Every structure is written in C-alpha cells, then in structure tokens.
Length: 181
Image 1: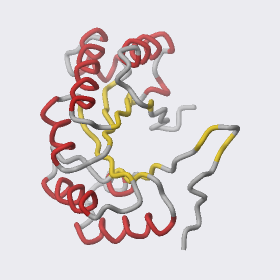
Image 2: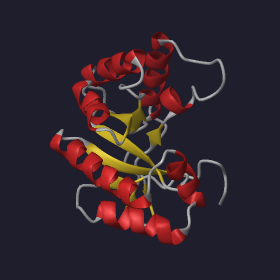
Image 3: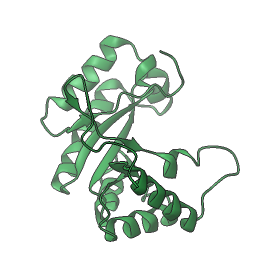
Image 4: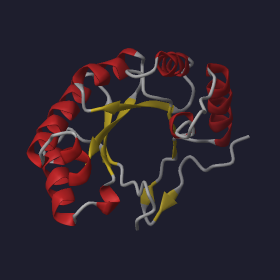
C-alpha cells in the first residue's frame, strides 16, 4: 500500500521523493549490500511510493550496473537514477544500463578540486561537457556539486550558473553532505 502522496506539493511546488539508500547506504567501512538486498529494498521503496531510486554507480561497480539494469528492466512505477562522475564514459554507462536519469557529481569546493589538481574553470568545463553527454544519452540530468553547502557562495554561484546556463541541467541537487548548514 502506498503511504506517500505521489502528487504531493510543498508551497506550490510538485515534490518527488528521490531515495538513495541503495548507493549512499553502503558508504561506511566494510559494508556492501548484496544484489538481492538492493532489489528487496527497491521493492519496498516502490511500495512506499518513492518516485525515484538512485540505484548505484555503474561505472565503478559491476554489481551496481547489474542492479540498475534489473530495476530499469522491471518497468516499475519509479524512475531509476544512477550516480556518475563527470566522465563521458561513466555517464554513457548509466544510459547503457537503462537509467532514466543521472546524478552528475563534481567537487564544488577548492580544497576538493585543487587536491585533484583542477581549477574552477576546469571543473566548470568538465561539468558542461558532462551534462552535454548526459543529454545526448537522453538522461534526466541532475548537477550534484559535492560539498556545495560549505562552498564559498561566489564559487558555487559561478559553477552552477555557468553549467546550468547551458540549458542542459534539469535539476540541481542541493545537498548538505556534512551537516554544515
């Protein structure tokens, strides 16, 4: 029995519940769901009325790719999303698995991207290319600036406005990863 209202609204905005336990639930030491566990959790989320399930990161895990493929093939009344780095081949792997949408992660704070040897301009160009590839693959595209809640507002604004200004971003994930806000 569905316990969430699929047409829920908040202050005039239509809400969609996007759930991430199949991917984010594994982000602790020495823990990983088995494929069967992920499929059972996904079934429970469907029964609850969740609209979107972030099923994994296909490019870095064959098991995640398999789960995304299986969920997408079931034609459940949920949208199957996958997480991806801003790497064209990783994004294409999400589409190849049948995902309907992709969460494109990119470092937003200088201490993250500078540690990788990148500049803000390189991050922006990688992001613009990544969302372009996602749209070419027919994916609903969500920009996920990692650590965005701790980012300098001017840097965050430059990143988001330049990338979203391409017209290829469908949504922005405003995530407070570390509870900074």
